[in-house]
Length: 393
Image (cartoon, rainbow, N blue to C red):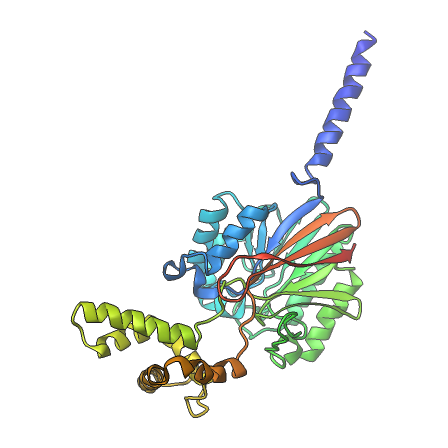
């Protein structure tokens, strides 16, 4: 009879130890998770190679994918992104998408990924009316995560262009107040204020991040400070950075697209590839130009713009027929220059700096969070650890 209490005590100890272990991952850390952002079209079939977003996923699989991945925006089109993540990291691997400005066109797919507002794992609160599936919070162990839809206008989940409207503020305050005993991370697409890239200093979206609406941005900042948010994690700028903004850490995840864009050397090389292929099939050079231009007109126009060949007309507004002719002239001039075309291409590099592709691994243990920043060379090469930063919690 005296054995029974001992057995009960042993059982209780085992249960307690097992329950505590649920809050830790296989590494022994309290929690590990991955952050990626802004890879956009590079998850589509055309870019399914290691030099693009797939390469980031392969590197994540190799270094350890943690408990889940969360992405603060711009992974359009959404369906191919979800498919590729599932293909590389596993069908059961949780991916938490946070809507970005380019994702609003694909909002129905985002809604479907979190159907009913509770389809994603561990959801504890879905968004206010009109954003029930695109704004949410979830828990992992002693950590609380909030995905803020900054394009919600109080009625529609795609109603504004990057702002924390009063309805979002009120919902967020209720959520943070209910989770104040946990370590809190808040995710949104746009930074409070844009910070230059940590490597090459490139600075984008200076006046059109959340600071475009300064009163609401400041209220958002104050709210996160009030509830001791560990960090606000964002994207949008394609530039990786971290900064302590008067007591609040802002972590910009940069982009995970492998290589950010085409560039003049690539344009010239690709046209040559098309030219050789068409020549073998006895097609005219114009056919090679047409095929290549149709393959990626937007990116080609972007290169022509930064080569100063568009008379100042933005690549976003450049007419396709004009862009096509500019590309033809660019190719013929580069071919004529031979080896000295390298000097010709310097105009592009003087006007545009490609930032290195990035993903981050957060490792929470005890009273600190280590953030391992992995970057490649900017041209689709392999990833290596660039820096580790430590946040106290």
